[in-house]
Length: 249
Image (cartoon, rainbow, N blue to C red; front, top):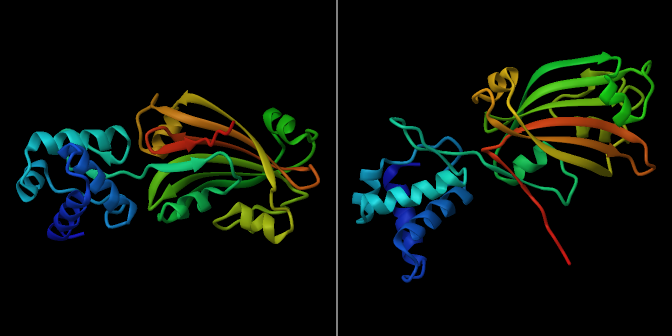
């Protein structure tokens, strides 16, 4: 988005905000509005603090405070001596069973994946327990890096018994589409979450530092008749993915 257009959009959003709201919060809200509307896309570069301050007739301290809040929430990526970019933070609701692609599309981003491997093999001990299968039962195991607008978001390993998915080549971009085509779309899931540090392999795939915080989920997916169709372990970058819970009394 051209700088002049962005400045105009932000200025209008700030003017529409109540005047008793502090300037830095008005600026933060205006930039958030531009991100939500997709006027500012993932990876877009914001003008520098000085340019924003002069164009909006506010102080650089005000701009700095607004950008600091956005960075703390993962909506901006700022590095010393580098440009400020729009981040790719994604919200994932835990109240509904959705695929990664559905989550990313709902945020106005383009889902993608980089395949690491697709193969038929014997299940690991963890997969045997999670899927409730014997050690001599083959599974299709798929390892891939999930992306949003080309940015690595997560490393995912899925295992599906071959009776539901005879060949890994049936999966193109979406595992759930392949399962749905065979009449085995998951209807519910049980998911466990924990934190862990990024391994050297995780760091290489997710473009982060080794030891950086990751959110790890282990999910078992069930058919309507109770059969377990998939076991999936996903390691999400902690600085770009939020899990959202809805609580009711």
